[in-house]
Amino acid sequence: MKIIRVPVILLFSLIQPIMFVLLFTYVIGAAIDIPGEGYTSFLMAGIFAQTVVFGSSTAMALDLKNGIID
Image (tube, rainbow, N blue to C red):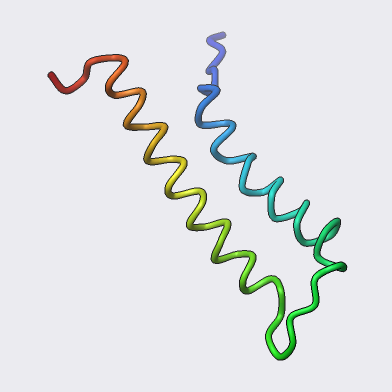
């Protein structure tokens, strides 16, 4: 039987946004009051932008290190 290993980068790129959403929603979210709009709509937009930027910079760093594009 062959064991399929999940790359560490893929694992962290999936877990990090989930942990940030849970942390900022349930732990810190009660302390932040935004009149009119819910806090989670601002949170989800920020987490999505952060995930895209961090993911693209990590992919670019790995590409430079491994030399896929010469």
